[in-house]
Length: 267
Image (cartoon, rainbow, N blue to C red; front, side, top):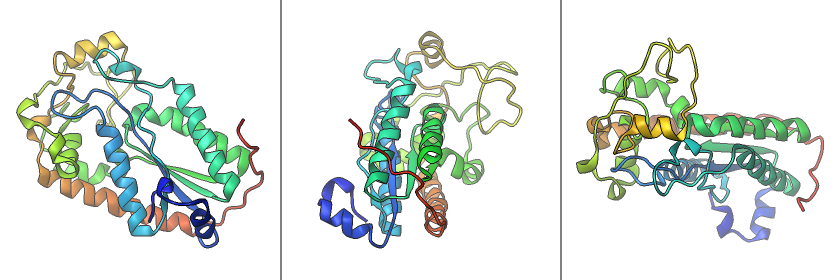
């Protein structure tokens, strides 16, 4: 495995003689409470991509540290791209990779639900226009089974800067986590007004505004219970996510892909 930015153009050319897959980590820079860093989503995406690349000998592209996060702009330091900007950036990058000979692009999303709509649109645009295989890997979804098994927080405890994110960061980047500042804050939720992959009874998806998210997050920015997080949970979660991710990459490697149209040079 190698980071794309550490390689020469000839290194990439040689890689493409035997392989055609590249991994693109996409995260965000947004508030994650008082106990986690703004780069949490990006750190997760980068760590997953790097480890998966190493285990499957796959190139990892330079990461995107910014995503679509307007709802967290009420907290200082958050920096958001417009949804259409994120979509276009990913399209442009994918087209660049395809232009050089990559046929399969695996996007690692560290920003859960928020990044998914722009990323799905980008993947669809690229696949339909070029024939390339574009997949999105989201740890929140491929880690769903183990997350249900290890979580100990009450209903509503999985949200933002929650038990899972905090446990994962305790395992990946413990030096950036301050559990003494973690607080439990589970906002009251009506029967209809929430969106949580762990709750099968969801009825509506109600996007947060800057104001409503600030009210829900309160002084900390947390909308969950990170106080029950542990490094042990983070390790189990990470290992399960990685096994699923590696299996996905190995499966994708065997899929025949024919590029129907080489993109033009972006200018």
